[in-house]
Image (cartoon, rainbow, N blue to C red; front, side, top):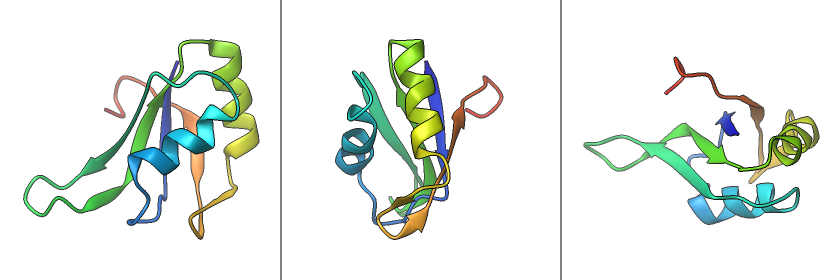
Length: 82
């Protein structure tokens, strides 16, 4: 399951994102989208979880919660988001 995470703190790294989701199951990848020129976070990213049930549990538990001082939005990614 591919999960979209928005409103991330610009200082949040891949490891922190992965750690937040790993509480709910296996995470195969966690990436934060960055600006090509500056390397700065764009404030959103994607988490891949192979088990849909675990992914849905993570979405339900983490949506509108705080991560690194920001309230994040977590929802299933669709192909148009990427």
